[in-house]
Image 1: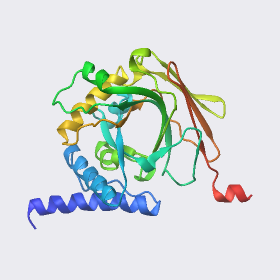
Image 2 (image 1 turned 180 degrees about the vertical axis):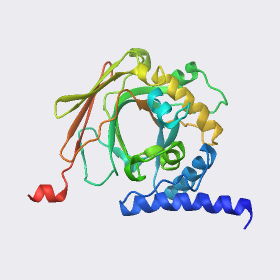
Image 3 (image 1 turned 180 degrees about the horizontal axis):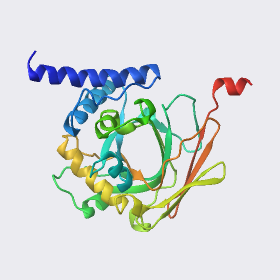
Image 4 (image 1 turned 30 degrees about the vertical axis):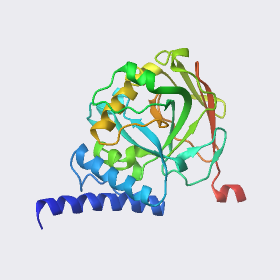
Length: 271
């Protein structure tokens, strides 16, 4: 077996391991034993995306992860990562997420941007991002990991579509010029109790900085951001592990609020 063949087989084995966890609802072992480095991890992610698109899922945008400097230091990296968003990952504001939808869920409040122009330059400017953004929305991302116990390195989370789960968007669009996304304060509450706070500055110094990084990264990966894409720019505060029956509400200054509920487990409902 040649080195190239071995490399291809390892990428496919990593993709199959993660797809198996998706299908079974049972977290799997890390995949870092099969792949080495971000290039290989993104190659695994591409295999997942191609498989899902072939099954009829519709791509709706991208998410940015690892925007927290503390988390970057924890994983030994110096840049964010990214993953794909699909239409079946979008949950309406105020709706309930069925039990088991997201493996090992962790919720965080974010600024979402919706684009009305393509971003295809090799190197973009913040002005490019502003011109390309139709509006901003408050969002809750419920991240999830197919990797058992969130035992992840950069390679594991990138391969696992940046630990994606589902996302919830608010319903009141705001033009970027009408809100200070760097200084906007965020409060995330669970059943009325404050569980996470932060500001736009926690997201690479400014959510537009995160979007700028993503625009360049997607061109480098060969899949530029397009008009109509939703971009989740990254957490504004610490993640929260929701429990069945929880209700989370995020409020972001200038953008409004967004809310999501988590269904109880069937056994709890019957008791």
